[in-house]
Image 1 (cartoon, rainbow, N blue to C red):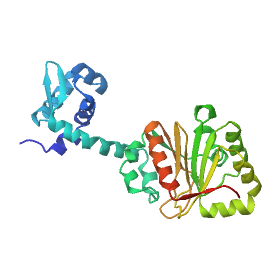
Image 2 (spheres, rainbow, N blue to C red):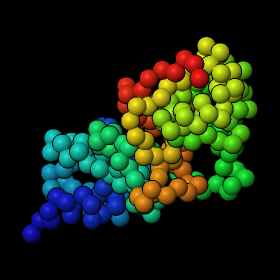
Image 3 (spheres, one colour):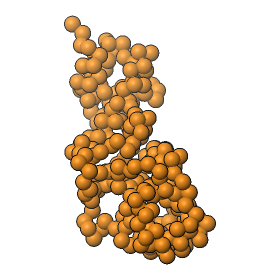
Image 4 (cartoon, rainbow, N blue to C red):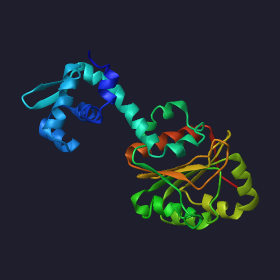
Length: 261
């Protein structure tokens, strides 16, 4: 009796990885052995299972996906990448309020590859911008959406603007009130820079902040009970930057430019 396709794909790590490796085209056996760090004796029985279930075919010493295999792997990859994102720290993800992310981006959350959960000490918490981008020449543009101000925000923002960084900054309505009441002088100075682009979001924000440049992104979500802790997600790579840029654009469309404080 043959296995179900779900068993064939997910009950064996080797079979699952082989299918993913063949996603981009036919591969020779030696390539598969090297990627899997295994032997022919261990691999060939798994290849036979995949072949017997019409997921792969082979000629000479080369394997490729069948039409059925291609259809399945096409839908299988996003699911596996989504689980990899959450597996990076399922306790963190499970404790976060993710309602601030629109559904169309949640469906693409597998793009948040190469991410790690950071729990900085209080002394490190307000120097996050340095770990995000220690050399501003790398990224000419920085985007931030936030409900809070770092205690040392003035030198951070001033340094960026003096280094000709194009800074796009969306704040919550509550934060704008605080800025106008307590930090009018500082933000009046910022607005004089042509590279400082400030907006106020016209709806409720139920997260702490997210920010990104050309190579990194940081996301700090609230807990499910609304509480805040120091943990944030640091992601590297273009796919994550593209995802967070879409999130920024989602908030930008309901934001109003601020030209004076």
